[in-house]
Image (cartoon, rainbow, N blue to C red; front, side):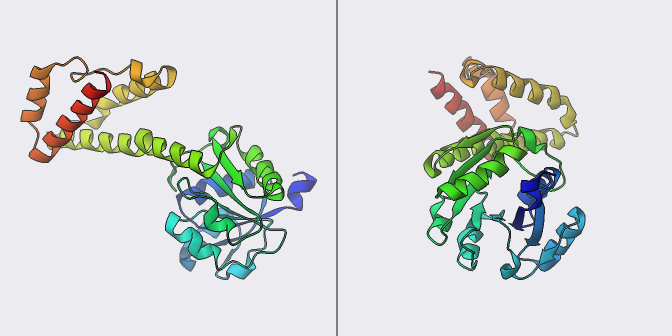
Length: 258
């Protein structure tokens, strides 16, 4: 632990998916977490015990040099207005779609530390490889937040709120919507007692091709080749709701590649 880290503390608000990956990343770099606060005190206690840190049910106890709010978007401003920050404290949120203004209008030193990754409390993520997007409203906040971001990640990018919103929107398409397609695919196989594992190599190869090429150049399937016979076979054996989704997605592919 270096001298800067030994004199530097971070407070965390939230005990959900983001906090479960962010806190161990901070601890691994020697940062002191003074307290964790959560809306549900039991969640805070469980979280604190898991990472051997202290918890509190009093926002006034959060005296870290940086106070990180890893909470739902709707809770950011609600919590921000309740925080009585000292002049040398930096308040930060971790949301992709919320502008810095939701906290900057209340605090002298504010920032955003948005880790661009999908997080689940039960799954460990190597934060070193997670892109971290930061934004600040003062030079002081920029120095403090940049130091932390560059210690936990090798990929730090400074973007404004509008740019971050565009990145977050794109992330929903490539992550959340894609996972929904996995779910639909599994549903189809489950209906016939067929194993989802048969699709895993396909999922992996599709992702690897998208990473090594421009995705628009590696689209395959019956829609892009206008194979109406196959499209009709698929649609006819799906229920009405799934058939509608299949047809709409196929039409999007056709339109994108027309």
